[in-house]
Structure formats: C-alpha cells, structure tokens
Image (cartoon, rainbow over all chains, first blue to last red; front, side, top):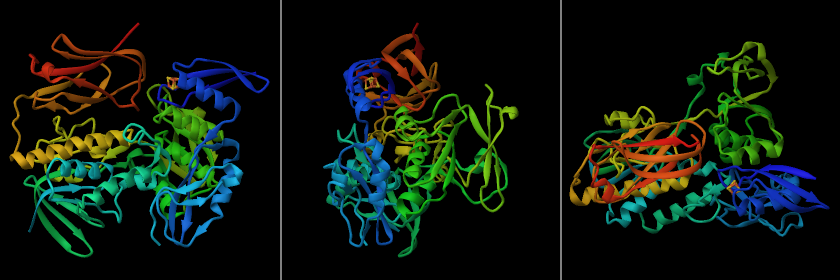
Length: 116
Length: 418
Ligand code: SF4
C-alpha cells in the first residue's frame, strides 16, 4: 500500500510517499531530511496529535494540553472526557486536570494560571 | 505629572520582552501599561501549541509562552499597570492614559517602547455585499469567545481567508462540535503555514477552496448563508461559479494590521507596506527616544521573532536613556530589490555592530538566492530552497561590511535560479 503525506515538521512542507507492507513502513521517499522520514513512520502507522483545549473553572476558562501527542482517531472522545470536567478551584500552570486519559498514560495539564 | 525613565505601551510578548531586556541593560525605572486585565496580550487566547521552538527549544502553548515572560517580569519586580488605556503619546514622550483607579493621568517618559500589537482586518474593509446580520466575526474574536469566554459563536461555519488564526479556529470549533463547511482563500495559495493546513483542515476533512471568495452574505438578523464564487487571475469573482452555502457563522481571517493610532498621534513616520513605523537597527522610530517592536512594527509569523525584536528595542531604549541619545555614525538606506516587499529595519544608523535584516518576499518561489548589494557589488548571498510571503526571512550584515558601504544604500533582493 502507498500513502501520501505532507510533512509538517518544518515549513518546507515536503510531499512524502510511504510504502507500507503488512502494517510496516518499508520505504519513505520525498523527504529532504531524516526528520521527514521519522514523521512519515508514525504518521503512516499510528498518527498522533497534541490536543489543546479548555476546561471550565468556575466562570472562567482554563487552557489545557495533552503532555504528549494522543492517537488522532480518538481526539473527539478525549474532547468529550475533557468537556465533562468542571473545576471549582484555582489552577496553576502544569496542574494535572485528567491523569492518564483513557488509559493512554498521557495527562491533560493546565497551561495557564486561573484564580477563581 | 509623574516622571518615569521607560514607559512600555503594551504588555504582550513584545512589551514584556522589551521590559526584561531594558532592565537587564541597566534601566530599572520601567512601567508597562496594558489595557487588558492580565499580561500576555493575544497569547492568552492562543491556546494551541507550536510556540517557543526557537526561543526555549520546546514546544509551548501561547499561555505557557506568556507565562515564561510573566515570571521574568514578576521576578524583576517591573511595575505593571493593567486595565489601563493609553490615549495619547506625544513626540516629547508625554503619555496620557486612564484607568478606573486613577482616572486620566499623564507621565513624562525619557524613552517609550511602542508594543501595541496588531488587529485583524475587519469586515468593513472587505466590502462584501449583504445585510449586517449577527454571526460575522473575525477569527480572533471567535477565538476569544471560545477560549476565554467559553462559548461557541456558531454551529455551521464558513471561513473566509486562510490566515493561521482562521485555520486554527477551523480545528478548534470542529473539536468543540461545530461543523466547519469550508475555508475560502482569495489567493491561489494559502496565507497560513502548511503544517496548519495539514493539522487543522486535512485532519478534519475540511476543504480549502483556493481562488475563492465570499460574494454575498445572506440573512437579516442572523447569518443564514453565504454565496461563494471562484475568482479569476485579477481576483474578480466569476459569477457563473457562484454557489450558495447554508451556514450561521462567517469567520474572517484576512490578515492583520499593526495597531498604530498612537504612533500616528506622535507624528511617527510609518512604512506604507508594513503599516508600522520606519525604524533603524535599534528599532528607534524617526522620533528620538520612541521605539517600536513586535506586531505593531510589522506582523510576525512567530512569537519567537517578536521576543527577539523586542529585546533589541528594549536594549536600544536603555542605551538611549543612559547616554542621552545615540552616536549615529552613518545612515544607510535599505532599498527593495526583486521579490522583496519590505525590510525591517528600513535604515541603519550605526556600523559598530552586525545588523540582522528581516524581510518578506512577495511571492512563493523555489530554488532562489537571497542577495544584498551595495550598488552593483554583492555583499551577501545565500541559497534558499524555498521562500514564501507567509514566512519571514532574515540576513545578517557584518559590521565590517557596513563600514565599507560606498553607495549609501543596501538593496535586498531574491534571484530566481534555473
Ligand atoms: S522532510 Fe525535512 S525538510 Fe521536508 S518538511 Fe519534513 S522536516 Fe522539513
């Protein structure tokens, strides 16, 4: 199987071609540098994205992020889990809002100080 | 009237970085003024990541990037007045401002750093036919609603303009449950970074229609739909291609304009292309002791570059105060060569140090050579695989090269190879 991607690692935006056999990447072409090959490896098999969103703390909004990129296909599910949280206390940068979201081993943490 | 050495107008990334830099250069009597209730400027609503890769070698969200600078400002105990609107700045550096606590008040500064940032091109400037129903927002206003106020301004969205904020909001509103139907871009290329097209549009199957624009907005009370059409080479809509799209919200992401009302009040000369002040390598405007940096000077694509530029302005302001002016030993004009829209700085008034020249190109080109010339003589040359209007470029001119400029001007241009 062949898949095409645009590399998003740097502004060059190289067009990558990836050959996949039995769920394994056998070759990457079109990349200008090794970072593109590495990106294509994950992107072809299990694409991941850092999730950034907000949760409510009292009347205010706290911005949050996933500490590592999460599986792309489940972003909506994580959004629902995050949106069901309502905080009643003040928050500092780095505070864990949801630990180990959906058993991924990845935390959702605050990216802003919010006093309520 | 209060006397303060250095007044910084704007407490966003530019203002904070300028303040820290001036402090570290030896000026302690500083005041930052900002109209918002907290420091950080636009970064507070830019909750996505991708900030700080150059400056902090890690990928931060906007609020985290801001927090790094807020901590520096706090640690140095640099005074900040929030919720304070600056009404006027004069050539003589008298600042008139107001807030709830003090009413209207004036400050005499020895030096001023302008760091007011930019605003979005609004609908009025775009002249789309139709009524003025509710449901039309700039992408940045929608970003504030969702990320700061916590509510979704619409459920079925069309976005006009493919600037980065528009792309970011396409993803953000989709994640929050809205349906983003399409993004229309007038130009044949996107105004945003490729990585944002991939992560914000392709990831969610949102189509990007290049060479398309909105020709009509439908609805009286609330947006009910828009008519979009393809445009020809001269950017005129081709009405035969018109197509109606039902939606309740139109977001505009059509570019940013430096917020220079205060600069105009101080009679500072502005550059017609950047919309910001004309400055020298210290970021001093043509009014002595008034400096400008960040998006008020020219619109940046990366906050990392804003911080870098503000450091130069902060250091310049500190030197100005300490030496009661500058020793300007030359005046080299920067002129625009092929494919270059503007440079910052626009002129160089000292050849004692190396000077980094930032510039933007007018078109997307592959396989080029960036060249700086003194008359016909090439004084700098570097190959680049790709240049694009959305990505700021820079070149460094060495002090010994500056000392030998014969024509009184340096021309920066882009030569197409092959
Ligand atoms: S392959 Fe390398 S050069 Fe090309 S876009 Fe990816 S990181 Fe950039």
